[in-house]
Image (cartoon, rainbow, N blue to C red):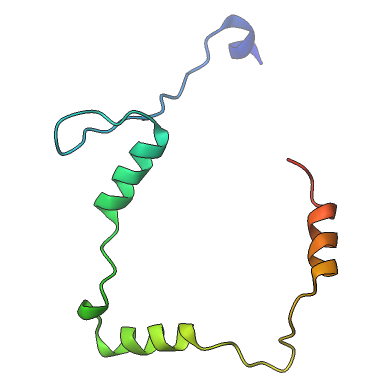
Length: 87
C-alpha cells in the first residue's frame, strides 16, 4: 500500500511489437501474436507425419462412440448461454 501511495510502483513493460522478416515492426498485438505463432509453431503437414501421427489424425476424424454420448438440444444450449455472466 505504501508503494502505491508514494508512486514507487514498478511498471511492467509489455512487448507489443516484433520485427518482421522485412525489418518492419508489427503494428498491433494481433500481428505480434501472429508473428510469434509463425515462428514458434511448426507447420502441420500431413506428408511429414510418422505412422503414429497418421493414426492420430484418422482417430480424430471418427465420431466418439460412448454410451453416454448424446447430442445437445437447442434448449440446453440456450439455457447455458443465458446463464453465463455477460463479461
